[in-house]
Length: 411
Image 1 (tube, rainbow, N blue to C red):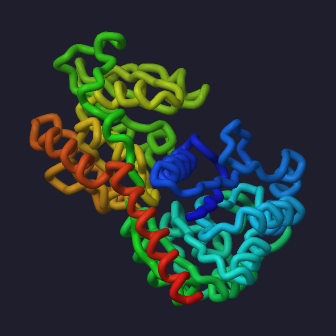
Image 2 (tube, rainbow, N blue to C red):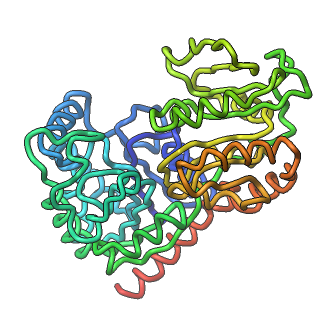
């Protein structure tokens, strides 16, 4: 089969790694795989789209009118010429809301040429008229048309006009004209897609993302010696983007205050200003900050240094970090936020807290892990059985084959 994937990045960040993994798996099984991305790469299977000037103009257009992925007309037309030569059997869209493509032109093309389209929902953008997530503000307008968007001036602001309703109607029209297969990367977002008026004619299912369970492995060693952390110390691992979120100020202070003298908190992915977090007077435990860690082997060693991973996310479709931590046999504590909670078996591989204001439940969960109530072996077993990326991404190959067979029958 001839499969074209389109994504904002390739080989880096969560979606870029997923796209590359699927592409390599396709090729391993004898298929032709092409990836379209604005990211420059030497990979011959990747088509670069647009240029820096086009991307900047597109970004300005988005910020003025709120019409993300509806500029870049010339770049998209050039891509369509290339697609005519490639003759894809399926076009698979991942994250395209990054100022590089015009999805109206693309989906008109797929409809006219009877090319099936797979949409993977890494967030909620394909289901709304503007935003990436609505759960965090309790918005339900995605069910009726996205008029008067409450996030007009949030995330990427729409300065001159609120076009959420117009964009929503456009997506409904384009989706209806296409043979659409929607894949949620979590059960949570899949159920949302099933409720969406935009997806009434689509085939909807979920396929979990995955991680390299060989790389994220408890046998890969840890950094306790290098960081001078006592082997008996209780070590909490967390990610900076959620830890330093303003809404988490209260709970993060309580977590730090509960640390005992030998305990340690490691915050990964800190920006420059966050790297200089000072040990405040009265804190008994030790705080270690680290920058973003690109090397997967090194990141695995960080997880292996810990006793527990805490993810304070208030909205996330399917946090890769949860799966990475579990694969390193690390119990996970998180909120029931988006798809974050469904990755954890409560009381078996960690704890899920339903209420963002329930600080006691977070502290109690940490104490339970510290007391040894969670089996690290169960955490590892869960990751290997449910989050092995090679096994999970084979489900995409099965989907492609299913679509191909259906297309042959129609033709």
